[in-house]
Length: 269
Length: 302
Image (cartoon, rainbow over all chains, first blue to last red; front, side, top):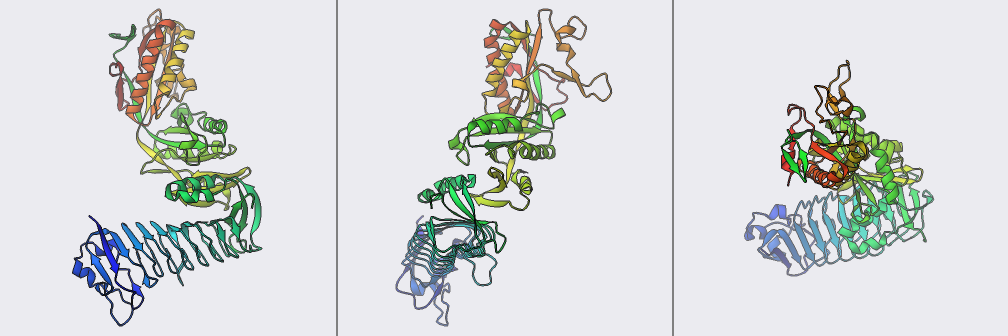
């Protein structure tokens, strides 16, 4: 059975809340029922059928054809199944998801994978600020899921993330891993002050902006844990495995807080 | 009772009586195969019998670097205990004293299983607050700062249901050197089967025991029926020409593994037997009253 497809007919007239479009909420609904689901965020009362042409199919495999930065909450609370977006999405992609897979070919707005406890989010393009970061007032950002960003990441990547893995192919902005509770961030480059306020967690990078004075160098190490990480990446995202060096220069911090976190650089950096 | 034979060697039509045990497996790695071996050998030391050692343990097989979680050479170790609680205690102690202490070592689960036995979950406290956990690929690892870097240990490993301890063969030969040569060959063959260990020295027991003793408080005593120096007495099971008896003891993660291992040992023993004066093969049992697993020699013939 082919995918349940939503083709965007034109640019949305307002920000859309696409949280109803998950396998868990669409299974068992008829096509007219799906088309009547409210997705608008203003008094206009926009419904699915007003902006999308829906093609019936397997609700466990949802495809959004044509993206927009106004498509918010894509895959919110996803528990299982797959959502594919051909294009861009707005903020809070995969918010609080627990499982399954979300693939976006374009770029994502702020707070991608925030509060995501399980599953995998793959963003082909760039991710805006606080990807894997906590929304305002939340206890944790990424919380166990895997977030893979093909392009660049904005500032405060993984802000207050609690567990899980963030992989960035391009550079990440300033304050990557800010306030990290735990987890792992892998990016070839990060901006200024990575790991500010981090308690635990690992930021593995090759280039960085100014480092805070509350990170202390612990020397060069051949960490067994990095071998485990490389094995994990071999299975998950083989093109990232080369970003894990055999020997690293390690900075421990942020000593202004718990200080059990680390910034790892290639030993020759 | 010797009414069976294989390669001209008489076999008693009897059975080895074995018991259900709680078991687990771990994979110990290190920078080199040598140091993985040292850690594993230390961890499995003084582990011949649950009665006196708290656990029966041994090395199942070396694990190639390509197959270990961290891509370093490793060794798979099997541990057997009376019950889950006793096994869990032995696992923590042996990991803590023998693997944690071994240079460059790391330790991972060697078996899956719904019931989990703590490894890093207990050892982490050694790090006195400096420990950190890492969850990768659905598995949780602990990183403990130690003096040569970090000790990495998986959070827990699985409990194996249906493990069997005490599969055995008794090899009766004309003299001690020849019987030992046959026993060594049989032990080597038995060890070649996956998922089994031979917990005794070199896989061979020379002091087979019976249950009970004439002395108060001694729960096992020498198997006098098979001691050649006690031949000629009413209780002896030995014919006049038998000069030495050695036993092979096998623990396995399943009854199938123990049986396969016993079969390999038996066939290797009888193949080498005529040249070294092997006279008879039998097996130890308690009349079938104590152990739930009966491995009949008759079933091992082919």
